[in-house]
Length: 310
Image (cartoon, rainbow, N blue to C red):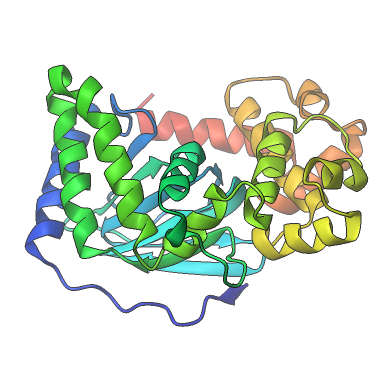
């Protein structure tokens, strides 16, 4: 796994960061990870984690305390207190919380971003459109100073239900605008340009996520992106750091693990996620998760029982 170059040093504490961190801690203690605002999720961890496999959607994450590493393909992205990660398209990732303790827990928030809102902003402000080199699916940068205030106001709306319906769309729009004008802007601008390579690949990855059980031919995906198969394959790998086959396999196996944890039968899970061969499913599952499905299911259920005190 190749570390991302030019990792940003730890950002110093500042009043805005401290205020936002206190708000996240308060909301976590009251409500836990989910929130009344669609696409807003909080994370709180008292110790470093093992590998966390997930499918990131178009969103950005701010680390308020501690540090995390997220990998896609062979690229690893390190981000820590006062830094952001932006995911411009749906992409399966492996991540680990690498800095957390009971005294200083890992704290972060993530917020989904609507590509349609980005498109609307770029239509009304065409001078913002980015025409430079293609950006990867994940990028990191220091938290822009002018982004703290709208994010703090968004968090405060959690305790203001009468105001939330009116003000939430306005604050989310401001957050998108601030990101567009920040070092994260080029990656975000690409998803708002309907005919950009990133937007086209993003539409394909969204389709693949929703239809992961279905077999596909690269030519069909290329047609969906209005590209030749060779051009599509090159852009897909450049943006997601994965081939289409690798992308589908990771999505299928992550869904298989979720089904196993929800107590689905091992024998049926492979078929449910699109595998025709039980032996191939078992081989791929073992390669990704380190154990065959049945054994991994027993370990996961044991871990859940221990953590829940059962």
